[in-house]
Image 1 (cartoon, rainbow, N blue to C red):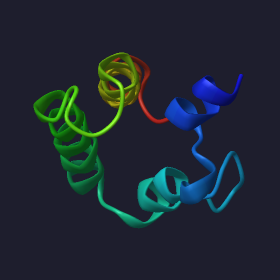
Image 2: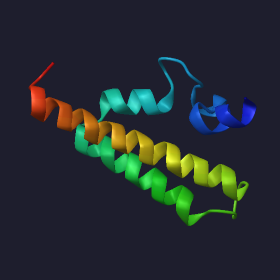
Image 3: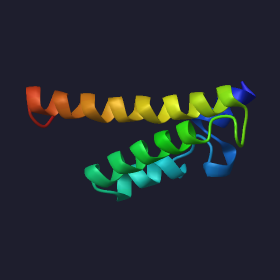
Length: 85
């Protein structure tokens, strides 16, 4: 469980609270800025695989950001398909 928390909701980024960094950024940034943030973080973790933390942990962090990026794209598709919900 602790390893999962270090990937999905690290305590040093606010844990799984309303004030978790990624949630605040999602609320404050434009959709384009938020997507850039997600892409940049995914690339950051891919570029440093095995250089800072364990390689598998870094890859899982990159995957987490890519999955969030996929969610934003799916949300856009949903809005295009059904209009504002």
